Image (cartoon, rainbow, N blue to C red; front, side, top):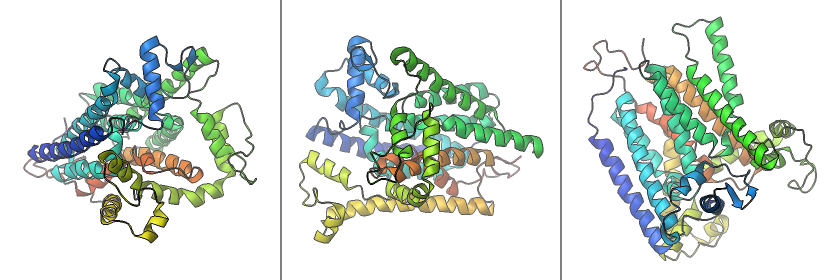
Length: 443
């Protein structure tokens, strides 16, 4: 069992407790003003699926029309709340999700404190909690929160398995379960097996050609690859049985139209699409045909996701609370000309300031990694960066072709980014805990 930092857990408990009080208080105040403030847009589709599923036993929005668009993970979660009166049902979901968030934050914070010290744990808990997406979407009726928690929890268990031989089977089993549920919650992992297969091939080649001692562990990569790929194929087979189409989700059809459309005409959305028999190939070929769009718009798309004034959230909150903001219906560019009220300026400054602070912590981590002063094990950093790169490239490509991308698309990436930033202040185990004075992860 790896050694741990022998510090008190009281600061983590206090930080998470205060954050829970503040965010749960805001959630309750908003729900009092509008019980459906967190139910809108795509969330209504998950609600429809859960209600039909509960009444009829069929996973469908309409009886006898099997669903193959939305994945079932989040709707299955909503099934738990169907016995509650409709008047309170989805307000209850919002409150429960907010409580789940803070229990999860506490568990991850305690894990980080044990592994990397109190400072890194506090940085993770506080910075992640202060991002606008992790304020709003944990209470929202949507699959984003569940997916983000599952993928990062799967990563944590995977990393733990690298260094704990006694509990490796159990940790990898827990990681596999998280990744399986994530694959059944959102379609973001559709091409993740290819990404993992690439890393597995590189790792195997590295172990054989350079023969490091000890060799880089491949068990976690194999388990996650097998589980994600198996889950995708099994759900595709389910769709074949109920709808006659072997497809993981027909969301891929929208991606084909988005990425593979012929953009040479005046109407890019209605451009002709050349189909193969495999949606993933259509997407890859489409991206290859539009490399200029991808390379030119990817970085601005990521900036839009991570550095965003987030005015929509403020306006929705103010409406629920009965507070009038003069610029609520005015586009940002026009509102700047009219002069934003101090409350809105402060809100925007807070959102952008938190994003800049997270970016600065990430840069500090990269700088310390280059200097060789980061105490995190290289294998942990490599896996985390590889998974994060997948989500960054995925969201960058999506944002480059879809101008509607916003802060919500960064939600699943924030835990990975903030985790790496928090490692910038991680400290090695002291000599009192480790007589050799060797940092964590040293041989």
